[in-house]
Image 1 (cartoon, rainbow, N blue to C red):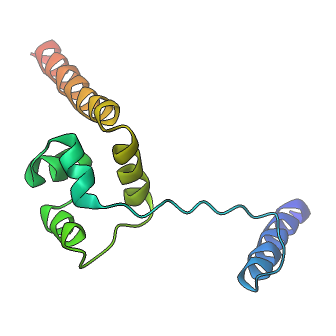
Image 2: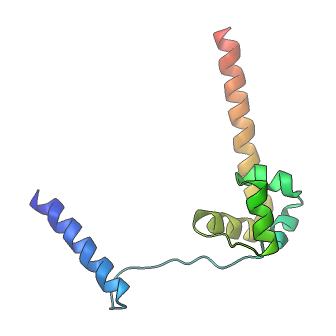
Length: 112
């Protein structure tokens, strides 16, 4: 129990130090901002196709493209990947979806 407490305490102390701009060993990764419309256009997808492929709502995509809102967190990381390698990422995303469909089709046939 002591090691668990020590680990939690150390983590909290690091977080407090980081929040007060003290020098810590915490490494921060901040993805670059992207032009969402330009990223979507690189993929050649419509807004509806892009939203469905990337698992975001069409409304959210439209807000991002207009600049009303900005993507953050995992969405921003994914958009950076799409910006840097659109064809490769689309292949990964659509290939995974096709495999899932094949797997579920096979499972349905096997159960029949």
